[in-house]
Image (cartoon, rainbow, N blue to C red):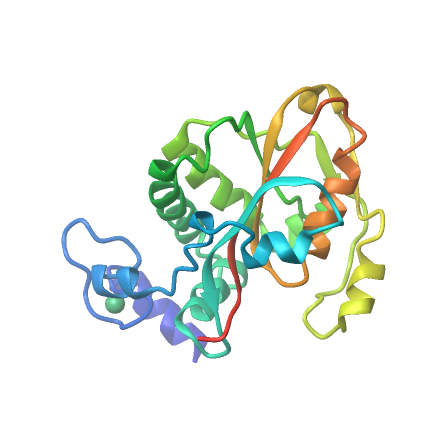
Length: 230
Ligand SMILES: [Zn+2]
């Protein structure tokens, strides 16, 4: 009944994506109650958080965190589907703004020179019409005024969806997946890699592998969500 949902949204666009209630003035995509109820990780406040541990020894990231936990059938999962498969472009920028607004006062973005969304392969970008990580990055940039560096890193390998693959296969799959085509863009800069979902961290490490040859580059990571026990 996807067509019916789409039609409904066309005529009644101001409903909360989670609870379905009509949105009030000032609310976007989610009602205030659902937005404030999303399971935050608060990782940006924790030393040696789960994401940092997941990336330890692979790439020297300066800061790393995920904003939300997601679980099977949970509300965050619903949002991720809207963002990735249902073309809800506005939601991506909105979630980027939410992350940035909450992390900005804690100093998370201090010293960051540019935001690098994890690129999609050009074929996938054509199929989907947008890169969900870029939407998040745009939202972050709106709040922080940190520029996007989105043309120096490209995805070379077209891969099948990784959701059904085991961890080892995922790591193999991302080997030399990305290529840095403009080291000048990143030279001497501290960049923030932005992704929608962090699973094993393999994709982010593959991005970092492509970027790390750049002289004096420093890298940090921010993902919208990671799997958690909630
Ligand atoms: Zn709601």
